[in-house]
Image 1 (cartoon, rainbow, N blue to C red):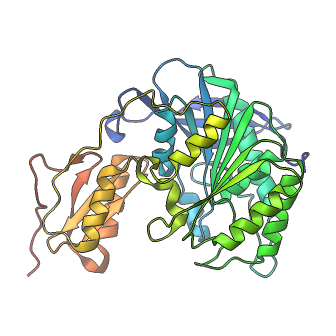
Image 2 (cartoon, rainbow, N blue to C red; image 1 turned 135 degrees about the vertical axis):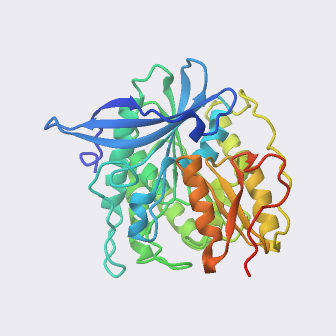
Image 3 (cartoon, rainbow, N blue to C red; image 1 turned 180 degrees about the horizontal axis):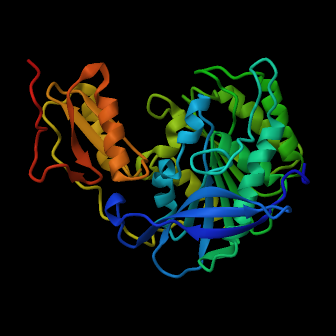
Length: 382
């Protein structure tokens, strides 16, 4: 397995971004990056990334964050690092350089896609986990060369398939990696409350745990509709069976599906347990870059019952870029984690305009779309 998870030399290039297209956060820097892998044949493969870190020169402890695998294959190229801006900001506020890395074939990262798990009746999990881990470790290789990175203090953080990937990476015990945090770390759920060949998934975790000696924190919510608590416990027990140091946080139910726990605004549903884990690693947990409290915006009128809760979440969320749309009858649409404000507007409108509704943008980022607006201006359908 170790031969399969080898890092390659990389180059890092910043990507220009229009200042009016992204939300600026005082004291933090948010910058899109390209990580260009140079293989043995001299050809490169570009991985898309986004760094969120304190504005100073550093060096800072590194948190490498990697993403999940959508249930629908058509959504793979639509993935983007901004989806994880919220958790990245939680770490960056506490003095970390958080870098969200898109693996091969996702978003704007070069292909091919290398994490195929096969049909439901003939699943393979270990090999795709190793392939995903290879991208994680390759990205880590270049980030170690950045002057703003403290190479002796690294955390690998993953969500869903990304959580599975960082567990696979833990099997190689990469130097400088102090800990692994796996949010709902697994793969293979084609629809809610079902996993294809879970025994194979458990055995993959057993394989990773045979050689892993880096402390890890596993986080699963009680109402995760991808991977239920019984499977989470079975995977964890298999991983630690041969001495892998790990702890399991079985979080209370979160929202409609606990698989989304990582996106809890400001990390309120998971940060206290993560902080305990980081304290055990002698890693920072105190806020070093205070951010302004979430901006209060007047709620649009009218707004249906679900919209009240959605708008409250919108105000608290730092999953930039974001937008909120409404129509004249209280329906709404919302978008989080878009690449730009323009993209967020388009996505929120699309969400709102289902069933041929006539919608308009009410809020963009932390501001009302029209200054002084308290309710959306819409043409009233005849």
